[in-house]
Length: 67
Image (tube, rainbow, N blue to C red; front, side, top):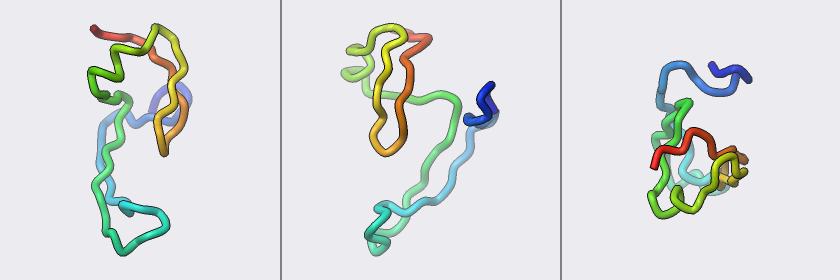
């Protein structure tokens, strides 16, 4: 876990519902890690320490940007 106790030290996956309200759509595999991977187009628009919103997740701070 990270300093806040929210990110796993080792990445792992879990099966989750594809849609919360429509379970007939089945399941998907979701990866959990202390790092995220974003599309280059989106990532290039971030400024250092900018707060961004990740849909169906939470807000995040753009730190350690590798361009």
